[in-house]
Length: 452
Image 1 (cartoon, rainbow, N blue to C red):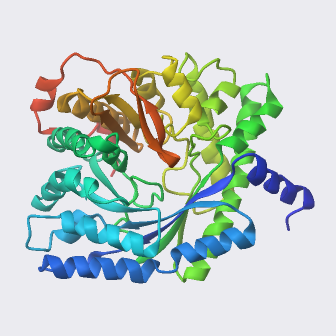
Image 2 (image 1 turned 180 degrees about the vertical axis):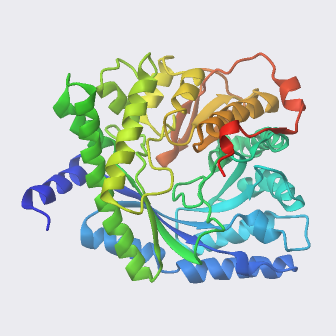
């Protein structure tokens, strides 16, 4: 039974320290929607999503009101659409994205993820069609998010897909140039993508999942920041212990909401993702946590070590609080979505190479980074390859969500609003990687992938 002190602590975390449930995400399998007729398949997709998630938003709002816990987003993830559309006799996959978008609007959710392909070892014709359709699909829909998995520790990196996605990112930026290239904020390229991620833009419903599932993502950078103020100047083992205890409390709240949503929606509870997901709001920043550990500005020397401690302690605290921790679970470092990261990037302290080093020890990777609009497709592909290599070798999930800001250069700002925030345009190396990317083929899996 919770003590009066624990209840008051939780109320204070919600009221003063930006603790919230970042998302309740319902995963829906669309494998039963496959049909040779593309119009019939799209109709089935729309009907199954709306039938499955018709009560999702209302249930989230009811729990929020009854429990007094903010639930920021309600989202849907679906089976990677390349698998569903492959059964249809069509070369145009954009109608599938539009069916997803209509369903998301009907259900009233914030985003729907799963316009996705899994190509880490090779591309089917359906995968290629979907990837080539991404720029049009993201420019003509509002709520659809897309992801592509190009590598894994087990299979290596599909460099043909990496090259194609460099071109895809550029085309997506150009097609949404009138909106500060917003389409790129809804496209994630993964290595070692997970099947139960509730966070957008990378969420999809894995083929190993049940027919429907409820996954919850919690977030509490402000709570961790506040907790660390009580251990100023203390040794790092005390810092880690403080973060662990805080993550424990955050995760317990997340599991409570997840199980309640699961019961009310008559849908199995999947996982709690305890990632520290920042927002542009002051007091809700991962960068400020790292600075509270003693760094003058996030991005200076010592940042990677501080982030490694934070990420590990969050995971250790979370797994003690729930037997169903999953997703990504760690610390996110999306530049545009973190007030402290934005400030550090504008000051020139946080740069691309340092961010890449930080991705070795945190969740996901190079996230919500704006680069000059004239950055070439080959350079973008090389950035994707670098990040995929980090994930492949370290047996962890990494990703790239990069925004070549059309018509803008270093020093300008990309404004996306809401949780997506604003990204200062950061410099990239101007030296060419074109010959490297042109080789194609597959970077082999590392030796330690042979575990059987």
